[in-house]
Length: 347
Image 1 (cartoon, rainbow, N blue to C red):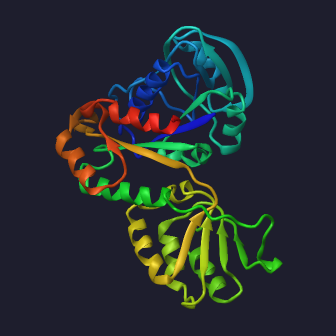
Image 2: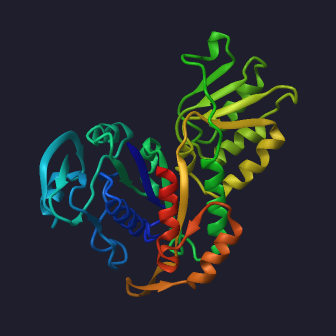
Image 3: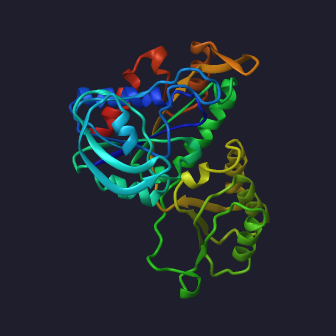
């Protein structure tokens, strides 16, 4: 079972368009599909701008997990309905096998534990497609790989978008560092366990002081969300001996994406070598690539919006030139590059 997650850095960045193209690709390859989401998505119209949004089309034979009322309201037919035992805001989540193609609204679990329970209903030989959003990306840590969508709806400044992509690439590329099972600060193995993340002011300073205060501590394992501002607090307070190797290990890179300004990570990564620190994660998810969307809704007055676009060729060209990770605009370039990412994944 391969789990592929999809998330957009903002509304209207083309995440659903990317998901629909990937569904089409696997359907044509006759792969068995299991499709679900995190939270709620799939509206006909954007709830802020009122502009039309793409819907999730599912092919015949795909298994979909969503709130039961939404499966019943879909213009796709569903059979073999099974209760997952998990609830979401719109009711109990059921799985069903599509007996005919059609549109469906996805409303899935909001927590990692509930998502794991739903994915237990996915056949072992299936490709799981997990629809999400950047604001609720935490359960995506379950995914084997991730495709992110960004674009002009996030920022019309292509250079800023490129810098954010580079920051996300650095975060998702952090090395995996294994910890000894059951290790803790008092066991003599030099491991400091820090719960609660680095999210609130003062938590970074406390981490630095604890590492500075004991030469025996070689590794700090931090669980929870990490704000770059608070991590900077820790780095600025650290006073490590140049002959001492110290590592800070987070649970997953997604915990670093959940909070704060992405561009602040540029400063974090510039300071880490100066401090002499190694930073890694216990587990990771592969970032397959980034889809770029030049579309941005523009207010036309009195709360009304119209669809506008930045110049697609220039926007994509700037981003591609300033980043190393794979990027594509599937509307401008066609889906070929996106398909190549998926082929590389499954071969």
